[in-house]
Image (cartoon, rainbow, N blue to C red; front, side, top):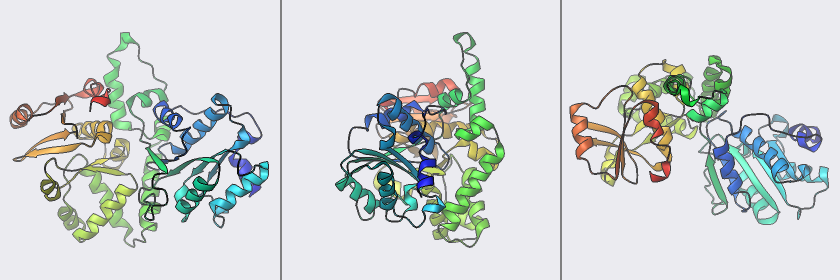
Length: 392
């Protein structure tokens, strides 16, 4: 095990500087949570950049906070060689290497922590008994559910998303001068096609996205839930991408795939748990929400586009607007067969149009509906209006 631990922690033996791109909006959150004892969970889609964030933050601890390298321990808990070892045994091996007593504060970075079945109880024991600050990651929402409440009041969750447009430009090393303001829209359209999966943005290798989708579906859904009919699950995902930005009827999908509505609901939740899709409810009172159907969105438009093709720019644009405002509890407004894309929990009405306009009935509903603020968004400049999200 010792060799694996040394390979996973190169800063123990050499100067370490993170060479990847910084994602400052997440690093600032990690920085703000550094001094409290809470366990920090990074969660989100596979390959969205959680490991890179952990490594970047480790570099910051060493370079900017003067933490001794031997007081920082990183390990990916899904390594095959660690299958028969508990987290406690692995951490004990680390402390033994550096002769660190339990009273010595250390920083534990536990990647893919949910690969260990007893992780919640073990993390609770670390939290209660050891002098540690724990950062952990997981690619599954379902596995993070704390059924026994071991970590209640002891954790904070940071959801890591695909690159936003500004991060996309930074990863592409594109800088737009004030004199070239006209380039913003053309690069934004490229972003609409590429999406924000970091590795794909850097390589433009479309097979990477295809393989990523296959890996998530095969490992996190088919294998994890012991599903026999693999093709139905893959067809289900294609239908979800076809319906991104639209209302989703389980009965219709069940009819198309020749499965039960209950099976359709179950598969749908599997995809939610892997962060491949998100959904929003119909706006209204509780009974209206229950009776209404949800609208769904892709977690990354690049994954959507590689699945069904780059088409329907209006739906892609709406999807990007959703990703921009998703943390502000949006619903969709649906009155007498007329739909407006979003209304946030604080009462801000938003309609996303890409090179198109509201029809007469939509315009009437948009104008007459009482809202705190109203935004009619179109293109990159429309999305810029949402940059100050505190008001939402």
